[in-house]
Length: 144
Image (cartoon, rainbow, N blue to C red; front, side, top):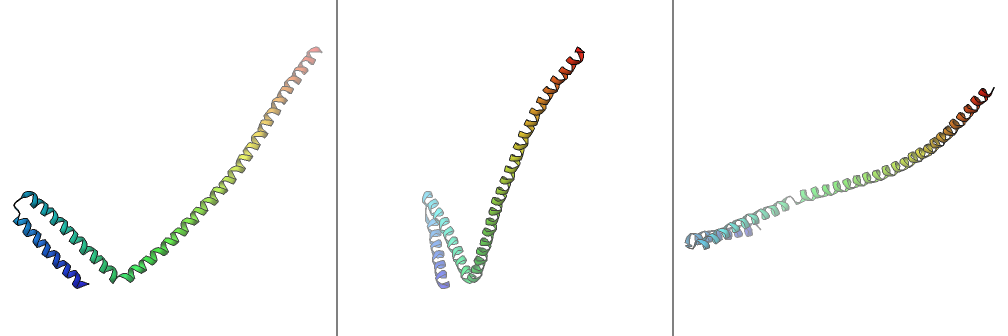
């Protein structure tokens, strides 16, 4: 693998030298600009290939560490998912409990409102009755 990589690097170095010679020999500015762009693309591809090969070699060397890290990450993700599900369940329980509590409060408020309305009506009736009785008493006292 290392020999193959070295051969590829030598071949790309030779190609780069060929492009440099072609750029130097070219008299047409458009063709020279095109060759410079191609050279830039070539250099980027070579750098990208080397980075990819280095990453692949690093993964081969540290494959066990990567597998352990991946396993730990998957365990962590499972634990996080379980925690999220518990939180969702807790929110549902809290929502249901608050809904029930609000229902009781609304029922108690409505019941007390009806009782207060009834008490107000009785108070008005008693006040009217009191006024009538007061008027009768005054009438009877005047008649004496």
